[in-house]
View 1: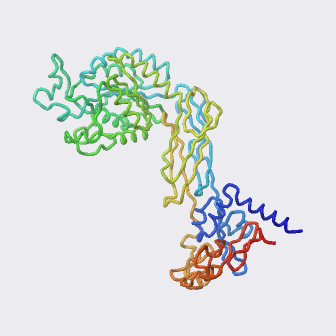
View 2: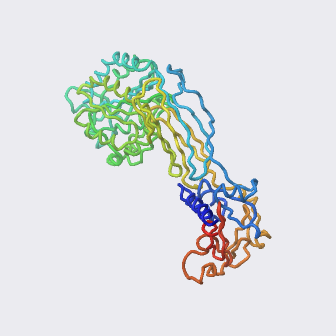
View 3: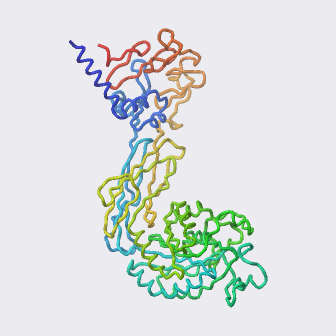
Length: 547
């Protein structure tokens, strides 16, 4: 009458193996020959560094629950993942202080095992009057002279608008034309110094690539005055050097004065298209764009004659790295091309249509400011070795896989649940990752330590030519690392011993030891089960199914 009870117990044990991850996890742990391989196989694998003895055979690597029963606690190697807050300054209240905090925590230290997922929360709350740095980057070719006058006339209205949006704002101003070389700008006598000589009754300044006229300043009168003083220029083709200028505006943080804690908004206005990487070669600008600040003391881009325009990918990388929000405010007849440019970029880039005289520029600024202040989008620079997944309920209380939320207003609290997983055991064990909001400069720093190596494998703890390894192998973490030509738990036999005797009935194919043991020196050593025993010459007997 005992058989039904035993069979029921056996079926129960079998069913546990088919729970999510059960049998798969057990198989991942079994047969690992080193401590590092064990820790890397699965997050629930543990290693026992007790030296193997004939009277007590077991697998050094197994599920943590199995190892806990078989191995003395001091010899168990089972590091756990952890998350520790290094800096967790409280979120600012609704009214913005001088150094507002919109994201918390700010700095975390993570210790992660491969394939073990660790989760933590990041909270975001928007404060009122968060600093705004607005840089107005203008195409100052001759066809834009009316638009420049419109901007001067709108100076006071712009001040009123910005003060309604935020009390903490600064303005900067720069302009671009194109590389002052042929075939972009005429070098003929009389037109080099006055490129507008081709136009009747118009005088203008020599062409230049980019010029920074005004660093970011809260003195609005200076902005209006600098725009008024700026003079137009001219070039020969319909394409401009605007992307060259964008790289300089984004990378010259120290010169222009970008605030580390601000929304960075660049308003790019033009009625023309743009040159891309490769086109500088026509004018001798053969060197690759350095993607770095290269301004002279008087604010001009110094490498405009020698270095090529940036590619779309290079520009995108710079804008994302510097947390820039760019609005291409352009005329309707070139908008299609700017829309295509924006589609190719991952940075925060928008396209708006300008009226012929730019009189709608204030509505463009207002609309784009409201757009970036009502949205949060988290991104990271984790690379291929570490996977990061974002979930948030945003404001609709529906938890979804998403890294952004929209419709946010001042004082709204948004919580992201962030899961980090190390996908393997890379050579570099320490990584610094930044989670950041693409629309502001708020950043969460993650210091990640990947734990997939065992202390007992350190060179100073390895016993070379150990007597326990037949005097030829190295004893590390309780197992023998045998040299070429030797095998066995203690390197006691020759590797030339055939595994034929580990196959039942002298079979010539099929798994050795029934796939449930190791063939050591021609004999099967069966794996230990968590709730059952495997025995027999070829590990063919299973106590779950036998009386």
